[in-house]
Length: 530
Image (cartoon, rainbow, N blue to C red):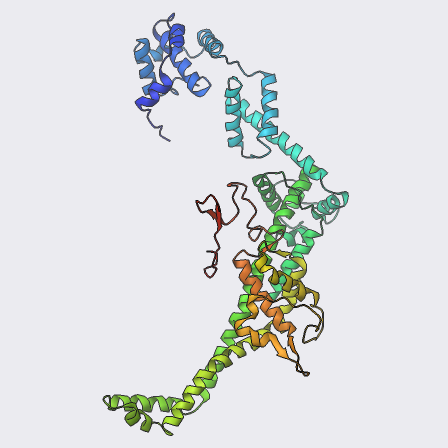
């Protein structure tokens, strides 16, 4: 890539010989004078010597040459190898207070990088940047590129060894045994390769199941994902296992464990093997939790959408079966177009058999169809939920923990607890009379008359299955607004938890107000907090 030419300000700032530097250069002549000055200013700028005569920028050489009053072309005569250049380098190091990197310095640099850098940053190029910065801060001349690479590699390995030992020490013996069993040989004769490759024929079913991507929105997919989540939780990972490990480090371990075959994972030392698989399980647990929340939202939406579609089709078919309505419409249009100047009573009423009474009956039928339509949709939705989807949605309440930081939405959380408590109540139509049924906003409106029903003794009670439908609809709406969040999720986590990069609550933006520095930004277009 072409280098950007230096402008005059950069030349003056970085390539001007200071008084003490001029005194250091004054004793030299010709090419030696220019070469020494270029070495000195290059070292001052970059903290190292140039690797060859082509590395110093041409405009910088011209600028320095004018200061030392030596033609820039003389630099070609400067000997870049041998005793003279080594003596010049020693003079420059002594003048600037730098020293060559010794074995002891390299060990200290490796320890520093392993302890302060490589625990959080696993990219070698970034660790190398930190190495060069540390060398400059410690007045150490950077090692050669090959030695830098070896130092960075040693720091990364040391940091990984200490981190994996720390993570494995936090696990119980039982958890380690379960994790190791995930990649244990299916039989004693492992014919697979010792390294590389993707998950193949020797992948145990449990690990393969955990890695699987979710299917389409359906009850079967929901039950499968629930089974995956329970499988991961059965390993027994502590919730704070990676609490002090940088997220990018955990993500890197998860990526390695996801692409390496079980036979390759078995070749790693036990602490590294356990840590890689624990990172995979930890991340997959959050991903599966997110998937289950999205399946819940999509399933509740699908129940309502399919009920509306089914009822609409039924009403359209019923409308088409009623005889005479098309003829009435044709006669009205024909009479209106034939006598456009006439009045309705003179032209329209006589065109219809039965006159004004027939038209009033049609109007009454149209006006009453709205409530009938809504009631039919609600009945169809309840039947679809009870006969098919209820099994999966109820099971979700056993594996997901819903919470809210807003007291206004506590009734929905309490409603879910009530639904879970009476999930196995059999064919009970109503909740018991002494039971406290939380009331939330979703129970009002069109659902008010369906949720409450009068029993045979004239008592107004809450219908259990209808209440469950309304509770799940309210849960869906509040999840989309982030007013309700899920423990152990990533995308659907607590929105008040500070972002590790910006130190601000997730999903919030600044208001510019000292009294209220943050305001919620909701993703739902129907939410008042948007």
